[in-house]
Length: 82
Image (cartoon, rainbow, N blue to C red; front, side, top):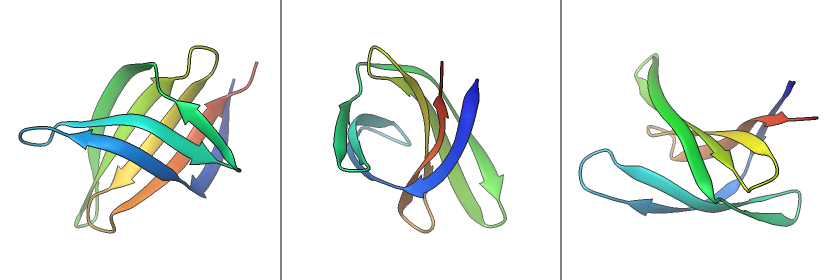
């Protein structure tokens, strides 16, 4: 079951050619999570902003991260709670 979080987080990313963005790790509530796998990614428009979504895993938990390209802001959108 996915639990909504919606908190701002700090994310380390690798920017590739074009719109290629690959998150590497993120901090949430004073804990660093290393991203071992990006299981899927998609983008959507929210008004004038493009928001990139990333379903990622640290090997134990599935998270959804979002990046608002207009605001340059990362959020932890959801966490899979088992």
